[in-house]
Image: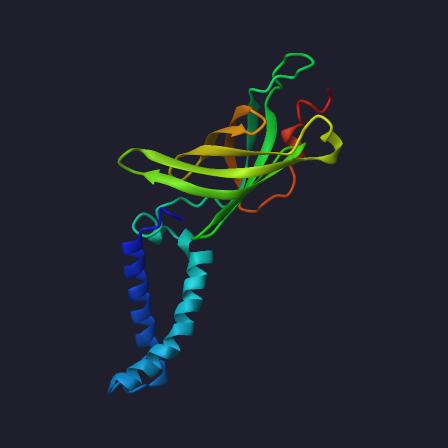
Length: 216
């Protein structure tokens, strides 16, 4: 991710390696008397550092102690629910469908983020995404490009397409995502989401209602 603070990350890794080096030296009771003995301890330290780094990139980066100075972006991992309001008009009636129930599942680590958005008729999967963060300019956004594929039940009136979406990240901690999207079908719209749970759901909960086009 382009927002990672390289200087802070370099310092973090240096301190982490130094602590692990000392720990390994103490645990193995190594006597460091020359360069060769220091290199032996350094070599034994590498697997420990790699293990801790893996744990950090997958899990520990979420901890509040790292946010701000090392981790610049918020944790969005989990399931978000809400609605889509499209600007698309039904060619048969000229009407714009009402809000479409939607969930967004986000899988996030320290180095990458992927998104899957689901309605009753479509599933969209991201292939490129990142955060845009600038405290001085008051910019706090997350956006991604995606490929969307329809359910086979609606394939006759809904075609696969690509698109992009950009969310404003609202609240600290984050309470809401509000975004706009545009697609290769020349459609646009808005998406409003609130956080539901840490588990990444694979289908829309029944309480969210039906797709407005399902009875057309």
